[in-house]
Image (tube, rainbow, N blue to C red; front, side, top):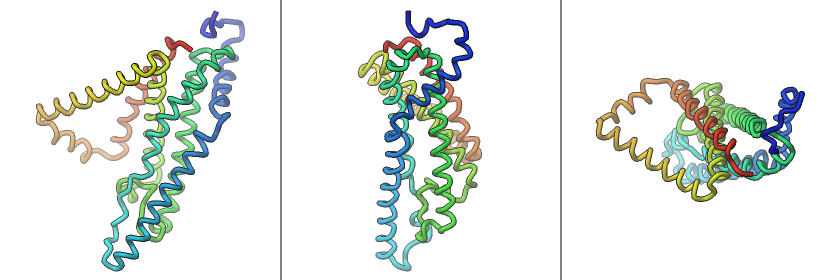
Length: 251
């Protein structure tokens, strides 16, 4: 009998505890999820700051005021956290089931941990973005924590953007972890190929329909909040797919 077949009295009451146990399991090694990402972020920021300083000194008064306003360096964290989700679930799934954690509780615990990480990084990056504004871009007009010229947007929108984008990439990673645990490398390669085919097919369809103008209008006519909110259906879809795959994955 596997952990999925547990149906003992009081199991429902124990479910919240098992979910929290999964959160604790993921957090036993904070290096990957809570330490290394900050070190890499500050390293990338340090490199950007050094380049801004060198360019500012070389250009002098001829430097444009918004020369360093557009920067996407902080967005590296999105792909990193997707990989973290794949690694975390692949490494801990077998151990969790061996400790009589059900697949449902394991997935809910993992989802809770990913949501907590998204909130932590969203709060941290927003706080750093606030300091960035107070210092007029670290004294150089450089905006690292307000990527792609978003420094003028309200701070709450920055927090929302980081949270929903991180959440989406976490759950894409969770679905990819399910693919890995069921079909290993061949499954992941097939997934990547499928995504590429879908994107190319979508681009082809938009081109044939002469709809690129409508695509552009979507981004120009809607607020950043609305555009960001469209990531939520993708997050939900990836989350459901991840759970469905995990229920049939072999430890």
